[in-house]
Image (cartoon, rainbow, N blue to C red; front, top):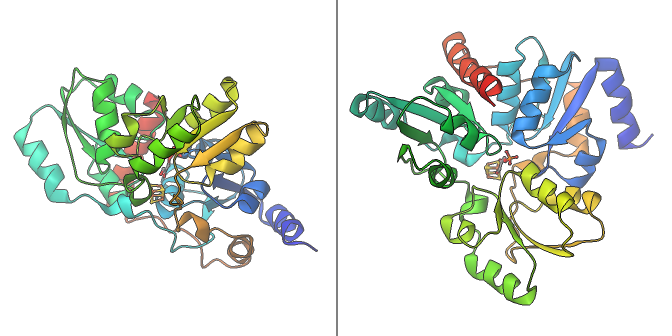
Length: 301
Ligand code: 13P
Ligand code: SF4
């Protein structure tokens, strides 16, 4: 029996579905029931009726699924798969903004721990941040933890005043603009598609900025033969499936999220066999506040 067949059988036995992010390894994406960006996957966690979710992503994704669907069993193939940015803000930053501005909304990127979400008013993902922030009644926005997504949203919503925090995704922040410029000179006419977690030197030269799903949809909806892609390299798999005829160029220094690569077929089998990969969810007080911010996001988006 192949690993894929074993997983299919275990899924049936446990009434489980596998959700995978586009940054998970290709063989994991291939056995997933649903593949998507973080917004799509949180919606799926809410909608699906199976008893068990195996989340091939990083811990904030598994934790969010558990907050959205508290009664379901949520398994992470490797509980050590974490997102460094998800921890990059302090409570002091939030308290300071709340004491300085009466009308501030604390907007929290889904790439954050449940505790950080519980300090916030609403959660967003890169796919819905502009829409949600635009419709908030508040004139001041503290956007946490990502300074790059914050800067992107601030440009799109100039009527609001933004307060920034110094968090970032190491994979996107450290992508080198010189490498992207070299690709532009080598592939003239190829549009540059960037994730909003990239730093401003890259988003400034991008033709399109959007979530992982947004990038894939751009490729589906356009007919260029070459694309320069500024996000994690796992997206290449979905791009190739969507448009096998096109070529995709990523930064020369491979943009790899090592935590996402902890999702392997072997780890998925182990998670389905044992309960030690089960996400418990945070304490009641944190869970209550955090799930409210996520539910608000699902309503407003
Ligand atoms: P998406 O919401 O676009 O999938 O991005 C998630 C992420 O972790 C990007 O680094
Ligand atoms: Fe976090 Fe960056 Fe990895 Fe996304 S790519 S999970 S933001 S470290």
